[in-house]
Length: 345
Image (cartoon, rainbow, N blue to C red; front, side, top):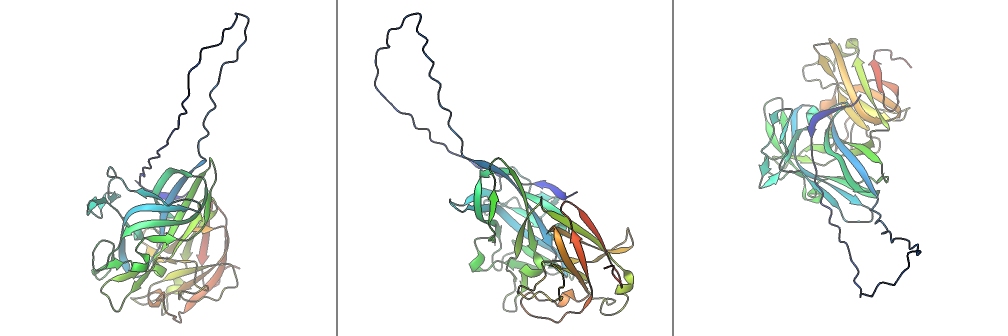
């Protein structure tokens, strides 16, 4: 089962159709006899344009050390390959709170914004951005998430466990929004259901020159009909020694598509992991747990590191990986995984 936050966004699109009517002269009706069998004239129906339906959700691959990553969203833009961009702006009659928490004002400079703490959307959790909206069927070249993230402005923000808060700044070359340059097709009379994974570990950079943290978005788009999830636990014996058994250790699982993978850090290369997941201790179960959500069906390599806090997404670090194992993910299924000192092959 896939979990979505109850908060839903409503998008309104107005379609204006111009009907052209032809004019003509008048004439006298022809005379007929009672035996005439004249066929009535039946108007030819107008064929509507091909349409499709799209539900679009958002999830998050987390970042180490942060306690909140709040993004101000203003809308969503989609670009048909053969057509102008289609924009959905969030409307005034929606609440700006998520699960009852007011994360930002309803209006910012007269515009409606929706604030999401992306750290609440980890694993197989997601929130709906567009709910079964009607769109022209056909091929599309990108999806763009419209946000407010200006320099030196506390609109979109990141917070850390030491109580500090910083502005998130989207540089000028990305000011149009968070863009996923990924082709996709909406089939006629079909309902598409997609999720965007906003990979925070790859997307947020600590700038030495600015007081802001930089947003360099790394996003991926998946079809919810073709994905599965991974729920895992980590053997406590693996975490008993350094570097795992230290106060500052940030324990994460890195995930690559395929097998026979040599684990490496995030560095902006093709060898980067597909995504990552934080390992956290559950007081309820007494176990160290992690979740990896929204991965396409297939084979994956998982590697455990206790040095995730050292990983800068734009430089190369030599991280220590404790163990690596292979996992097969099936669509529409939660795959259980146990990372032990001697994982099953």
